[in-house]
Length: 176
Image (tube, rainbow, N blue to C red; front, side, top):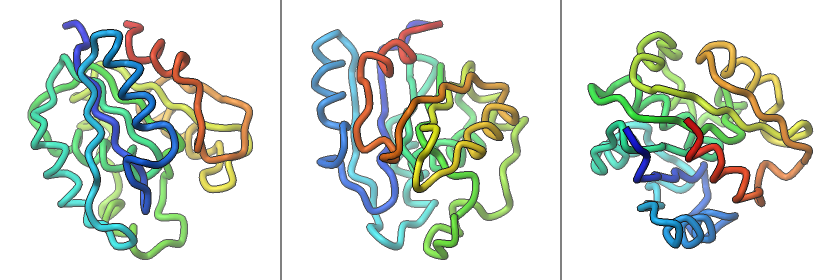
């Protein structure tokens, strides 16, 4: 199925106004994609269930790419583990594998991940990490690529992707 929709999920304590999210929406909508960038609830104390319900409210299917920055990637994995509908692709950007000593995030990681269940709900995984990310070590991306049979893309940088090459991301969206 052809990708027509992109859902960008921002990370912990971020907003849609941060980083590159709205710029990506504007750029990709001009190219004919429908791009959603919802404000995720909870600020410093997010609840995984609320994020899951918000993602579900878009009714993603095989015409969708779900793109998550940092905790947004974890929310996407939680969604995939709990949905009945497969999606076309998940793009995980600087996604932590653990709560990283932030107790407020523990509820996103409870019970670990059922890798086989997650993989059964997504046709392709793209994992993007910086080589020197101050927040999420490259090893996290390497483990995601291994556990999800995904493609790992390592980018030089140390900003936790506060900025990103939108042309690079667009290629990841449209590539089969």
